[in-house]
Structure formats: structure tokens, C-alpha cells
Image 1 (tube, rainbow, N blue to C red):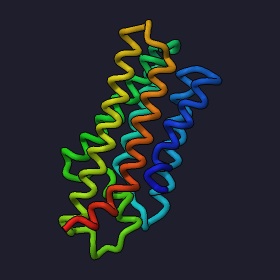
Image 2 (image 1 turned 45 degrees about the horizontal axis):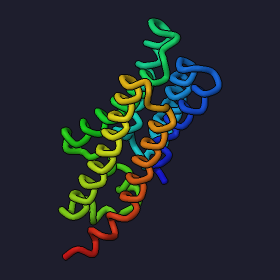
Image 3 (image 1 turned 45 degrees about the vertical axis):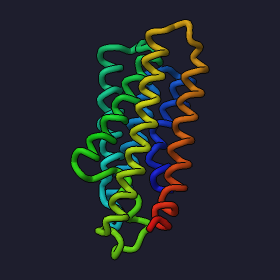
Length: 181
């Protein structure tokens, strides 16, 4: 559940953007991100998470840019910026040798398993699955931006399918990895 809650800023952004525009949507995404980071700061058991801190920086920076420089930023460009930022956050977590899913998995798995090779490999696999989903989303955004004849609905469908695949993999893979010899 924790990993899905981490995507609340993206959901808030999408909902508010539809109603009030891109800049208010980005501000809302930043506000929800700030609440998640604050929640983790106040809960000594959780600690700060790479994804949530990165999301706060992403939405905060994009909101500031939209408000100061580009208040009428088209949604396709904003989606590309948000999805690219999310993709880079996930890749950075792998490059830092701290796949972002580790922090969420440790909230659900006993500490004696945290340093096992299987636990670490499983989290790398899940993180890379999420990276693949975000790469697909970025590709869909690029197509939407540079091939205007493609209906916006196609990009939304691709995004939903990519996210559903990542969620399903996240639920399926740990048990599969546990059963492997």
C-alpha cells in the first residue's frame, strides 16, 4: 500500500489539472508530496523515501517553473516533464544502489531478510519494472507531443496499461522469486 500511496501526488495533479489547469495541478502535486514527506518525517519508523523526496522536488520545481515562466504550459509538455522526472528518480535510485522499492519493502518484510541477496535482487527487479513502465509513459508522451494526429486517449491508455503492468508485477514477482531455487 505504501508504494501506491507514493503516487498520490500524481493522481492529485491529474485530477486538479483537469479542473483548474496545469499550474494549479502542479502546485497540488507539490502540496500532496510535501504532506507525504512530512508524514515520513513525523513517523520515526518510516524515514524519508527517495521516491517521495524526489517527487516533492519534481513537483515543486515544475510548479515554480509553471507559475513563474509558463503559466499556460500545455498538458502534453507537462506530462512529459512529470513522467521524465519520475523515470529519472527511479533510475537515480538504481544508480545510487538503493532501488526505491527497498524502502517500501522493508516496511512489510522482517529485518532479518533485508540484506539477503534474494531480497535485494527482488527489489532491483521490481524497481526496473517500474522504470520500464515510466519509460513507456515517456515514449507515449513524446509521441503525443510530436505526433498531434495521435489522439490523447491513446497516450492515456498506454499510461494506464504501463502502470497496471508495473502494479501487477510488483504483486506477482516477490512470491515468484521466493519460490525460485
